[in-house]
Length: 470
Image (cartoon, rainbow, N blue to C red; front, top):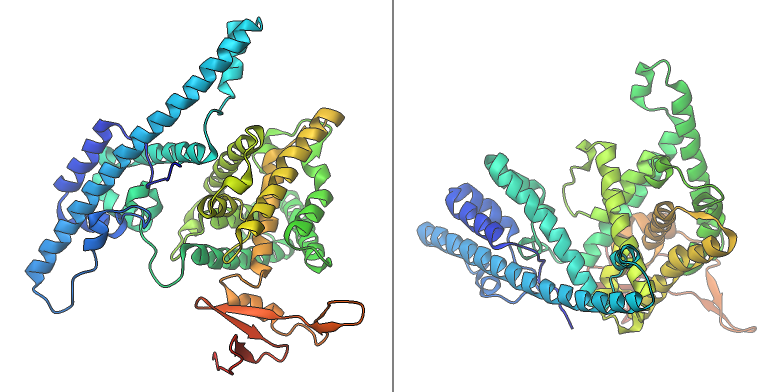
């Protein structure tokens, strides 16, 4: 099985350019790269073992020498890993080409002309496993990052260290920053998404009541502002109706919201370019989706980015998961063959679930996602002649998934959830049979430990010993 080691897709010239730039730009560049050039935990390298060995109070000259040595070793190991991943990508592409050539030969025997054969071949991604497909996708992402780095090295080399400092996600996989702190990456994503959902709901409610401050400067834009406020009011009411609907959680809630909005993404007339670009979706929703996709723990600079850049980030992500959805469905991938890492990554990209979800839960959520955004719309298009806006459908389902993840008791952000759920009524019971009724158990996860709390709010660990959390 192919296991991703960072990312891939470099030419020898680009690799040499990185190494020369790191060595020639001096202490500033080395310092910036040291803060982001840690090899991920899945990559085994001597550099990972050599970091963090320094102790306070030592010889500063020796510490500086060790710091420079570790930086050079990490850079060397990262470049070596990129090149090995590049070789693996070439092997995967060769498998794809063999599969395509076999199909071309069969189509030619069926009497198709070269133009038709080439058009069909462009849509073929088969002949490889989903793990290999995912490997190639990450390689494509790294090539884009390497292009951006190369441009900055030439056009603005003095700003490159600061760009790496404030935007560490611009670095290729082997140079990505390691998580800092006790929480796992999945817990950090859950926490950030929880905060994003709450801020989005607040912005949506405010936007439905107050016009944008800049709209007062345009006396002719009152009608447009009123229409935008009406759209946000409609979406706010739809979210409110979902929140109070009994049983609207997990896959049941996904079915409810997608059925309610079916007429929006399955239409009798072709969707307009504005609808495909989600231009009709309110800005708070687009901003919330962008932040949930990025899920950056720590300082975020999205507030200074214009809305079209945030919308572009969302559209690029939707294209990525749309291609992955098509591969999973058309190639008939058995989701039970995906390991925990692959399932977690697939669900994370689609905002499905959160920490402490079992493989079975993630598989069920991913299966339902594919059914709602691929299988059912394709059937409607073929049988009823409707037109499908896949971007709007996926964006809608991702919004629901993010909201459902916040309400889940296993969410890493416990304070906002307990603000609304901590005083849930005195009749919180579940029926085991016609004659037996018991209290429903509720759990709070704090610092990786599971606590059971009763309706009165008294914190009790699994051993039934009283403990004071605050």
